[in-house]
Image 1 (tube, rainbow, N blue to C red):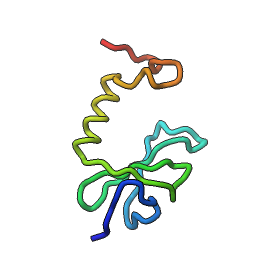
Image 2: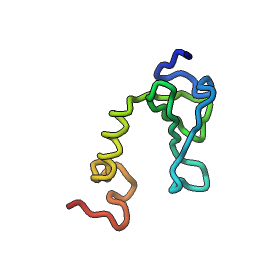
Image 3: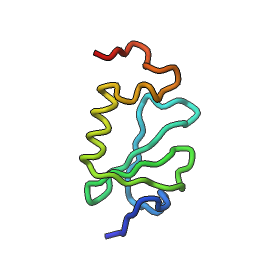
Image 4: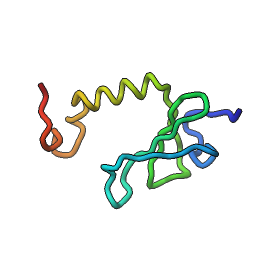
Length: 88
């Protein structure tokens, strides 16, 4: 099994399938995620596919996704809340 570490070149993660949201913009400004053989999740910048990959556990990604769905990070987006989204 390949040794995986935070900050390693994403290009070194061989045999993984990188996925991005269908909400990504045409300029390619998005993040991509890939499941690793041990169940962890690697994240990379799609504009720099050979750049560094950050590696998170499945639980860490699940907590992040719940936070996104709950609007915890809306204040970080340009313009504040996303269109049509209200906290409640």
